[in-house]
Length: 413
Image 1 (cartoon, rainbow, N blue to C red):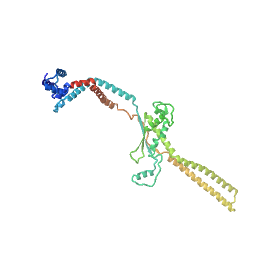
Image 2: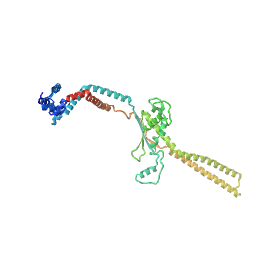
Image 3: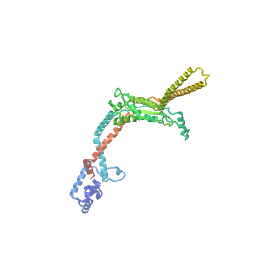
Image 4: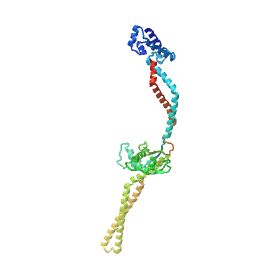
């Protein structure tokens, strides 16, 4: 068959106008096509290949590629082999989606139902209880010093922070000591139905607690409890108000832990704040006993002296001795009164320093979990993402499978 005839047919049916395009269609080199053109003849086997290609095109709907209106033609471009491949791929994607639409919907529905069931089964609610505390251990001098320090002034007076201070109190609440005491206190649990130590409730076990420092399980439970206790200060730096929150798996348990935390905090404050005061009281009590004994001895000695010496006016030495005895009794009496006064003052100070935390808001009982899932939003998100992912997977395997890849190549040639 003559080359010019083949070239004309290729231009009409395949849109191949250049020699390089003809070389691609027949899977030969451009040099071979040049030889055909020089001799004006094409071997018969390539004529058969051309007939086969034309037949395939006619079987697909007798569509002439030159008459296909594509986006490229709309903007004034021309269609080449790469454009044909893209159009074929887009057509294949649409056909693949239509063919697998039913399977995609069924599998997506199954996955969404399984996911929601898994969330329902594995969901574990957490409840929070909070309280607002007002530590009043800082004196008025601290408040004045704090205000003047904002303006760069120094009043020249310093006062030691007590354990009721808004600075130290958060550290006490988060301390290991209080957390350990809470772990060994008994609480009522809805899960067990009986009062158990907090350690057993948090560990879901009724076994004996291993409290050794090397116990990994105990340290893990202790760290978890400390992390569940949250302390936040007021945004106003001058305000001593603190907000304490506890998060657990039970609403009532969270409330009870907050109450127990306040009790333990007051006990610890009393122990710390009254430690030196107790030492002072013990010293006064010991001295009080000693002085009382000495005073009694001096008084008895003066009494006996006066019984034995009824007439003191006639003897200057007896008068002098009586004066000495009276002076000893007076001195011991003054010491006795001073110790008695200091002891009463120490008792008053003990009451003042016995813990000065005011509870502004009682521990709350919140029956609504803080981590309630939004199932409606989750369902909508799954309804969008799951079918999209499944469609992407189907298209990927369909486009890049050997069979489909060969089909695209056969359309492109």
